[in-house]
Amino acid sequence: MSKEKRIKKVTAQYLERAAMHYLARFSSSSGNLRRILERKIWRRVNLGADMPDDAQLWLNEAIAKCQRMGLVDDEQYALMRAKNFHKKGRGLSVIRAELRHKGIDQETIEKTIAAINPDGEADYEAALKLARKKKLGNFALKQPEDHETAKKLRQKHLGVLARAGFSFQIAQEVLDLEKTI
Image 1 (cartoon, rainbow, N blue to C red):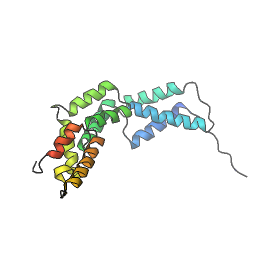
Image 2 (cartoon, helix red, strand yellow):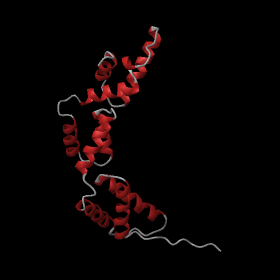
Image 3 (cartoon, rainbow, N blue to C red):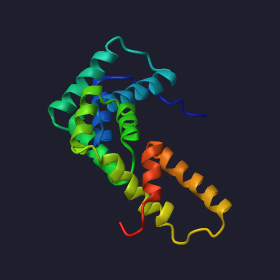
Image 4 (cartoon, rainbow, N blue to C red):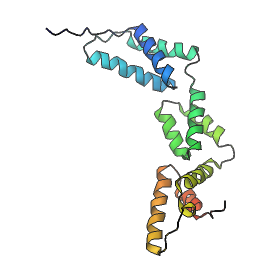
């Protein structure tokens, strides 16, 4: 005799509790929180619960309540996330893409980029941090002896910098720097 599992309904209280539980563990943007809650709704619907007509209204109310309580602040979240990525040596293009992926609007993204890049040197500084951290270019512990190996290693290092979101020009400048800097 197997017990049949009762299908839980999607309610306004459920969405609020789910939002609070998620925000207790992670910081989030309103767009990202919306995506998380929509996924929770669809999971319950896929398990057999009815899709309530007011689900979108409840979702909007739950997000608005979190914003009123100060648990969701897109500008703060974007600035924190951008600073963290910049500190790790990521390029501005990667930071923009990550913020866009997390549901941050374009205006907030541009304000955030302007805040972390006041002098226009953020990409160069981040590339330099990454090169030191990953020991790329002249920061490598040992330099290859023959020209062919050096050429292959340089291409590999250019690839690392390109995947981190830096332009070819910045990547070349950083790889050509002397180790004393």
